[in-house]
Amino acid sequence: MKFPYGISDFDSLITRQFYYVDRTDHIPLLEEAGDQLLFLRPRRFGKSLLLSMLENYYDLNQADRFEQLFGELAIGRNPTAGHNRYFVLKWDFSEVSPIGDGEEIKRNLYRYLNLRISACSDYYRETLPGPLQIDPQDALASFQSLLNTVRQAGHPLYLLIDEYDNFANELMMGHRSVEESRYQALLSGEGCMKALFKTVKAAAGGRGLRKVFITGVSPVAMSDLTSAYNVAENIYLLPQFNALCGFREAELARVLSEIARECDLPQSDADEALSIMRTFYNGYRFSRNTEEQVYNPTLALYFLKVFRRDCRYPDEILDNNLAMDRGKMHYISRLPEGRRLILDALAEAEPVHVPRLADRFGVEDMLHAPKDTGFVASLLYYFGILTQGGVTPFGELILRIPNLVIRKLYAERIKEMLLPEGKTLDLARRAAEALYQHGDLQPLCDFVEQKYFNVFSNRDYAWSNELTVKTAFLTLLFNDTLYIMESEIELERGHADLTMIVRPDRRQYRILDILIEFKFVSLKEAGLDGKTLEQMDREALRALPAVQSKQREAEAGLARYRAKLKAKFGALPRLHSFSVVAVGFERLVFSPSE
Image 1 (tube, rainbow, N blue to C red):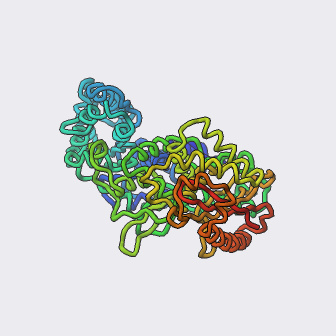
Image 2 (image 1 turned 90 degrees about the vertical axis):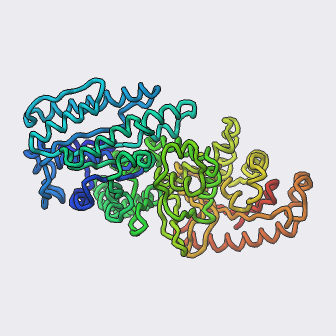
Image 3 (image 1 turned 30 degrees about the horizontal axis):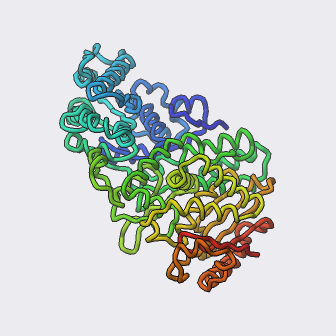
């Protein structure tokens, strides 16, 4: 069994007999949905492979190979009338450099389009009635020449566009000094992208272009292109396409069982592997009208490939190919409501909810418009950093962190926001190691008191509570190489603040399972001011009535959670549990619990 990690060429995948999760049964649904479709998914979610599959299915030059490519798949047993009946032209805008001023960007785009149009002409030269006229200065004229030739040949054209919003994403992440000129060159007025899509729209009106399928990450650029291209059907929120990209759990369960057999491992190991994958990779939901959740396919294939090769799990659960998502987290954290939203989402005190997903914001909005919570939360959704989680009793859409891998991105970004210095991060790492190696929480509490509390602003102080403190500890302790880390883990209708359960494949190491319950005492409840608190020794802090009351609450909670953890995970002889009481944003009092 071979896994096509990093392979998005459908022909190569099938002919080299790589593992393929069949999504060809969606082709009739796509044909019913319309002739010009827009489909959005987070990056590294299999969009390019989907386009490659459609390219091979509709390509008239691949008619003789239909049985070889599709015979064993769902669509091969019941093909639609359109298979192998089209000229296919594919554009991938991630291949176009967005660097330079407006004229240079236009030249880059036109150069790329001319190369693709010329390659299309060469590929279909035996079917096309004659050569094209490639205009080096005007790729739109070259496209018109292709359309004229296609009409004479008697077959319609299918245009596939991958990463249509790549330019807009680059603009968002770039520097403001160059953003404006690029925006004007691409998407405003008669910018080159707007002119291109205006031409595409006209061509689809009976001038040889029959079908268009567009993929991207967000609807940002499409909002700017609406006046030029307002005919696309948005299918990315429809329940029938929820799993068009992404893996279902039952599909992964079958593969893991096969790997276990090949590795001579018991079925229990396959079940355990599925549990690990569910925790780290599952949880994506792209329609409010379905309960189905899907796995990130790139992460799943990364895990499966390593598991098949080594007969054990990968050490690093987060594949480095998702590292670019950190850039999106950086961008979000710089927005006015971004920092607060990231902190709130990680704390999970209240679900993030919005009336609806924003889908009409353009690049100019990204650069200049006020950024409210709905705007920022919608971006996090499109980037795959939040996903749909149902609706509130008032009909608002709930957005939540999909899985533990994405939670790691949040934890890392918050730590970078609040502790930017490398030396400070080294101190934090050593303090975390003291806890999970030796059960010593004192260095971590000292670090939070001396470093973390100092960086919270007065605005943060206004909403400080145990969730804020818990978030600080979570960011410092997050370690998916050793732990399954859960915040607010549900244990039979109870919720533990922070659990660190050693990964099953790391049980041979002398590291500890950790359970922490957090409580918060405001300065008003303590009856003290911050300066007085700073001068008090720890025993005096422990003796405060408000602190003792919160410690008793925490101890009662810990006793319940330990019993429930045992029921869920079995005996945990190395479990260490602690209560941590924060007194304002000045001091911490902790106690081990047995």
